[in-house]
Length: 191
Image 1: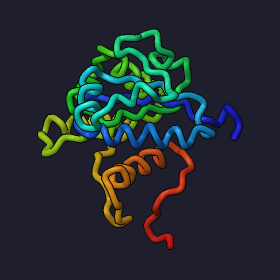
Image 2: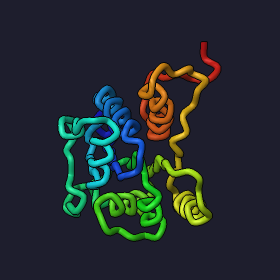
Image 3: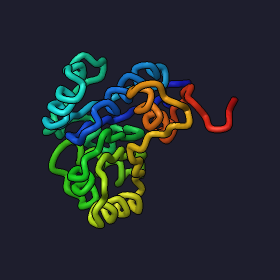
């Protein structure tokens, strides 16, 4: 796979519950390094707190990906000219989703999402809230109509996951498939 075919991804982590999804995503991206040119990482303050609370560590500081400040509008993926191929928001709070749906680019996460939509590039929101209000559903509709993908953190059970990480991986593998990554994962109907 030549460098022009490698993925340049933005990963944003919001303060929604579900830090396990972000952890599994970042671990899998490390395993897929040969398919990746760059991963830019941005986390909200709440995301860091939720990670520490739910996972009991701050291992996001030890990742091989550059962590950008949530207010750094000089990050390369704040502009379409940097040609990032996609963005995954994992987990995505409904507040972040609402700002994206409304076109409010008040931080690096929402600006990068706006860039993905305007450049017609892959934007995937791994939403976590339940139940959903009509406002949430309408925001999902708006983002979908603009070209984004809403991928709720709804794990599958047919692969019989053995622990929380394997359960979270059923969602993350689906997201990586949507990004066009080649990975070995459970496939329905394959023996």
